[in-house]
Image (cartoon, rainbow, N blue to C red; front, side):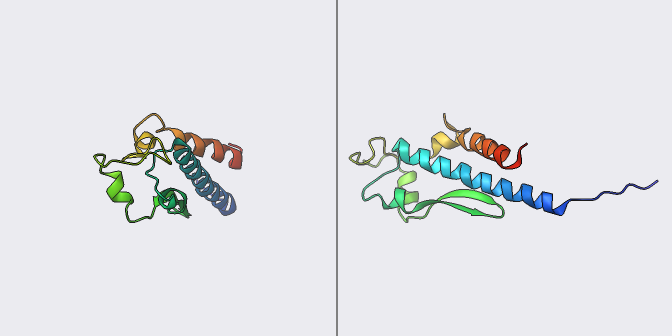
Length: 120
């Protein structure tokens, strides 16, 4: 008595592609929410508007801030952040998305987008 398993490689690839695209859409939603929350330090807007972007590849998606000052600003709440452009500016601007009130935003966006793309 043998068991035969046949995999639908195209269906698996479609699910993988839907997962990556759904992750990208979810991270883009987090980025958009971050901008609208006005919590990132903002002088000229380059770090928020140009240097913060979604990077996606076959392994998933991530939100990247590529400006050289991002790490220094993120981990130093003692700095006096100007609030002219972003009234809520300060350090640790991603914490609401990691451990705070918005921690489920990326997951919920991913699930909704994945369901749309796969019909599951």
